[in-house]
Image (cartoon, rainbow, N blue to C red):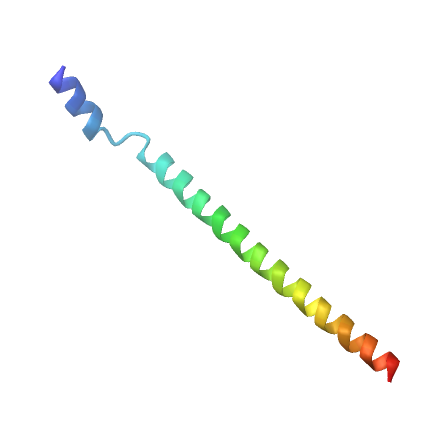
Length: 59
């Protein structure tokens, strides 16, 4: 049983798949974070532009 467990722990098959899954998950999380950040700044910039346009037409 110990030999089987030791072989299981030291087996490298599938390690590349795990690496790719971790890298892909990291890229997806970073893309989501960047998307949320850009979205928030775009909304803020749009609100500022709207305020400036409204002010320009009032004056």
